Image 1 (tube, rainbow, N blue to C red):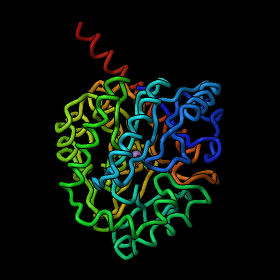
Image 2: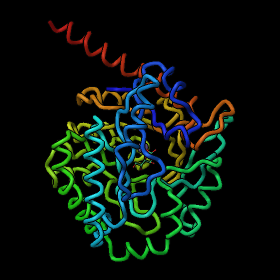
Image 3: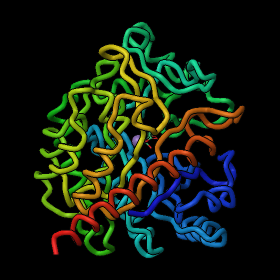
Image 4: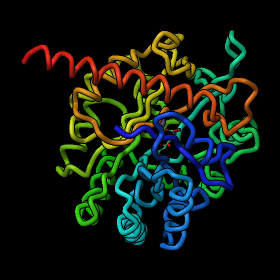
Length: 362
Ligand code: CS2
Ligand code: MN
């Protein structure tokens, strides 16, 4: 595995590349051209510029999170052909720049959703949290301003103001789009892009829906082992894979993450490791990465990745806000650096125990 952190670019991130470079074991970052709207073509020069900037800091681009998908592709609107063409060109340019992993999501209208971006915990840290009963009371037209007002002045990933400003139009586009149609549109998209992924060895890593159930009546299809396996099997290509996000999948306690990892063996191209604490059904908060701080067994998850032969990038997904740091919610330096250290420790212990067990056999 390759330990990485997410970095939004020097214009948008409170964390710098030299800081990331000093986190032990971190050799790369995942990034994006943060100002790009879904569907917009990525220029070669812009890709090469960010690559050079990252490499000059002694790091590598381990992948892109995300090249976002235009809603015309998700809804199967006739304009999708043009947007798929753009997507293919962007992938081609990324491949030429020696970038071989692309994370994306297929959630209608909204990306990740939370009811609180700074819930105070007993130790004085703050975390993002989700309470379905609060979400149920929010008018979808108000959710983005509710999120934005808690964003510490940062642009939230997946909540592009241009799109969110057109919510009425967006909701209208999704009228009549049920799970089956959304699934068919995902398969259509994947079939179109697989040839360029084959040509440039690009691993596509779909991010699970967060939370993994329908929000605001919109369909969601990347929510469970069965549903993920359905589109993995529908487009039979090793480049068709997933981002194993423990926090998103783990929001539903019925999702057995180690079992999902084993079922998806060979198709996990990126891992987001974070922990969360379940309070009651539909009520949860993010936690420190340590197993004992939340409801997920991070050892079992890391071991499952190791046993499945995972060798892609890992990032400690969101962190808590600690030590007075002000950053984009979930994306401060301190707690994510602690997460890296912990996850690196787990990985080293698992790898050495594995070697010791093998040696004992011979
Ligand atoms: C999520 C998403 O993993 C995360 O941090 O909050 O923003 C994720 O990056 C996208 O859904 C992937 O396209
Ligand atoms: Mn994630």
